Amino acid sequence: MVIVTHSGKFHADDAWAVAVLKIVFPQAEVVRTRDAARVEAADFAVDVGAMWDPATGRFDHHQKGFSGARQTGVPYASAGLVWKEYGARCVSTLAAAHTGHRLSDEQAAEMAYSIDADVVQYLDLSDVGAAKNAPGGYGLSAVVSGFNPNWLDEQRLGYGGADDAYRLSQFTRAMDLLTDVMTNAVKYRVGVLLAVEQVRQAQVLEEGRVLFLQNGAVPWGQVVRKEMPELLFVISHNIAEQRYMIHAIPVSPDSFKARADLPEAWAGLRDAQLAALTGVEDAGFCHNGRFIASAKSYEGIRRMASLALEALQQQRAV
Image (cartoon, rainbow, N blue to C red; front, side):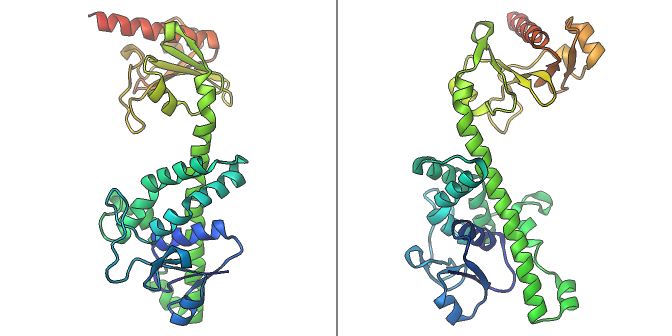
């Protein structure tokens, strides 16, 4: 099996698309060329060939009249075209390889849709000129573009075989980076999926206002925000560091605004100072942002949770 994409400068959309196909078809050979005969003979033609036809493995978006777009209106480039067809299979493959968990078809499709929304659509937007990279040039598209040889590399290597070989090696490095991005995105989502029941079954304390998780590494934010509106704090056991934590609950995944903050007087205090103020002998610290604090013992963190709730009640009574 042969996957063809264009030679010359590469972008994040074609590198992502080829990486997806290489995950789904690991024995496939990757060839970078613009030779029409080789493109025609390939099993997959990505970002080259002037044709979009998934049934025959054609995933180009440069042809005249192309208007493929998501239901949201975000246009497709090659990353999105390949992901639309093979994203769910890619997700299933990565989940099995890196977590040992077999996803249902529905779960794989949902994760693929989520990764498209979080990552893939921005690669497409950048490629078609509809969106800029992140400030400072460190959006994913810009990072991948940086793997291309610059004029100093070309001057050193010359043009022809050595230059082509170096560019292919750089393209492979970019694919490896994007494969890591995909893998991490899948591992995170599988972790969230498997954590749901643990969070739902966790012990509820303080008349339903505090949740206790015995393993602090379990991701809890999504379930708590969606299903447990009455909770104000989460306490957890950080097994690796052998301490207990109390967390404020963010109102959204990308916000520091919380349902309730830890007491203002705790902000920035550590060890003896925090212990003296709270009366909790093994108190560790409270972040200056008042969204997390620690104690060495379960009894200590329970006391800090009670104090935080008392302070909040007094504040609301004023």
